[in-house]
Length: 189
Image 1 (cartoon, rainbow, N blue to C red):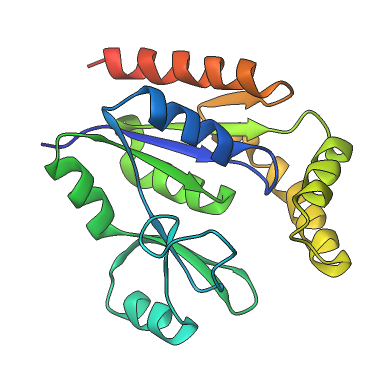
Image 2: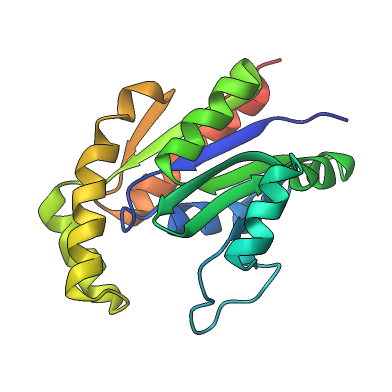
C-alpha cells in the first residue's frame, strides 16, 4: 500500500518537532520517518528512534549508493537526509509517513511526491521569539545561535513553497490547526 506523506518543515526552534510528536501521539495511522544525521547524539536521543546516527563517511557512502530520498549538507560536514527505506517501511505497515525535516528537505520531498504529500511550514511568531526559544534550549553556543538565526531568516523565504503555513505562537493552537490540516488531507482521495 502507498499511503500519504506529511511534511513538517521550519527553521530550527520554531516548534515543528513538538507539533509532530503531539500529532503522532493522537493519530495512530501516522508514523514518523526517522531521518539520518551525521551529527553526534544529544543527551536523551536514541539511535534509530530520533535519528539514524551515521558518521559523515557512512552518510556520504549511502549518498553514493542512491539510498536517500533527499539529503542535504545543512552545515559544513553536517548531513541530514531521508532514506527511501523509511518510506517503504512505513507504507508496508499501512501507515502514512510524517516527516520532520529542514526546509530544503521539505521542498525536495514535496517536489518528488506532489499531490500525495501535504507540506506544512511551521512559522515562528517572530525572529525575536525564535531566538528566545533557541537560547532556552541551552544547546547552542553563541556561534551556533548566530548561524541558526541567519539560516532561519533564509529559510523563512521558502514558506510560500509549502501547501500550508501554521504559525506557532501558542503551541496547543498550532497543534490543533496542524491536526485539522492532516485530517482534511487524509479525507481527500
